[in-house]
Image 1: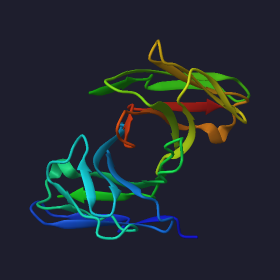
Image 2 (image 1 turned 45 degrees about the vertical axis):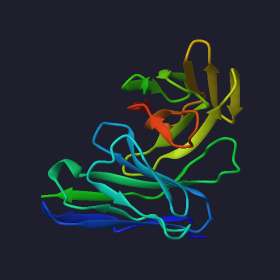
Image 3 (image 1 turned 90 degrees about the horizontal axis):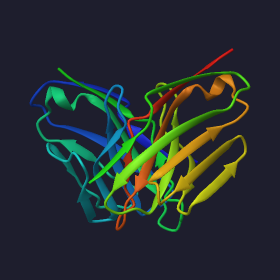
Length: 114
Length: 110
């Protein structure tokens, strides 16, 4: 019963490098989301996906790319990392049949861009 | 756009009752959710209100007034383990994604 996992859990990268954060869920939830959380702030939506091959921008999509070729995976790529992208990144999933819109969050990836 | 306001910090003693308020402005509204996040952890779902009124789940209750664009989370019989950040979040029309408030840090003291 793995649920939703993220890898790596911690990552240090240099400015200008490309980095990909992985997200995998075992529930076959149709919806998946990427949020970032900066110190002392709430979560801000980067991208979300309603199903495989369907993605849409959130509040802060600039500098990020997503893909969803399989229902269970939703990788997030920083094309050319900047210091402002230092943050904790959370992936989440949601079952389209739940009226509560409940989202299940992964453990997060702490990314530092030097 | 969507915006939410909630207090940044609340302090209470063990065994007490605390209410965390949330006001929101949104162009479309489906419902108001509450999430709990312990330091270093992931957010976890607490409750969801789509209709006006009170929803109770154990020691936690959540209230919504759609006409006032207002809701609150009520925590009863506070325990030390309730020390965490609490986020309200709205679901807008046409999408399942959440817009979060900036969170309320609850500190429970002995």
